[in-house]
Length: 152
Length: 107
Image (tube, rainbow over all chains, first blue to last red; front, side, top):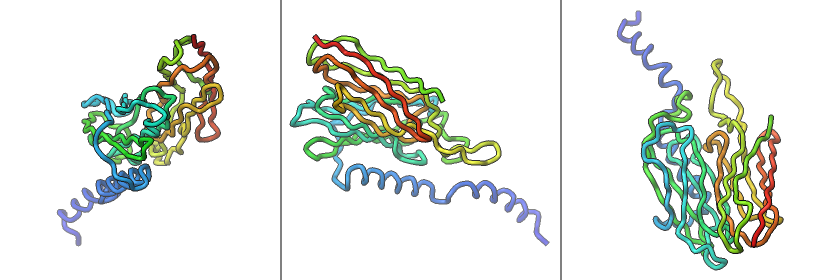
């Protein structure tokens, strides 16, 4: 016969762990790295030139205003071709990819994103000379997007 | 579904001026990760593409993913080169499509 202690252990552990894959953090990290590799085709990404403007403390992760600016003259010879935006903890790392060119005048794009959990937000800019630059910002999320799924 | 979109930009600009364009589309941007109370997955329904053309030439394009918030706002800039029409197009899941156009007079 099963002991009371063993029975309670089964009750407590079963449903809680059934929802979440065991290595969710590692899986998210791998997905993020794969997404960045796909965006940059494996090229080296240097920190700098890109600035993410985002509130450091987010009350509501369902609509987070994000603005990405890249330090670039935006001329025919030297301009930003694309801006990729990623989050670390979402079920999918992609947020938005913007394709611009010299006709944009300024290298800037604003949007609103969903952010699932406290973690990093990463922006990568692809320049016309083929180099990649990035900025990483850590944010704290109080009310998470996707919380009801137990995805965190 | 009603495809309501709003574009906010100046009506006129000097030649060479950088103008800011703000666009909003009314859309739920259902992520495909949420479940109903019965545990069924709600299918994904999002806007996936946004394109802006200036007198027929593409000046800005964006690919959207489920992590873009509901009623997606996209704001960007362009150089006012000549008077004409800016056309905006949103494309999404389940055949979603919305278009809007705006006139810009350049002096």
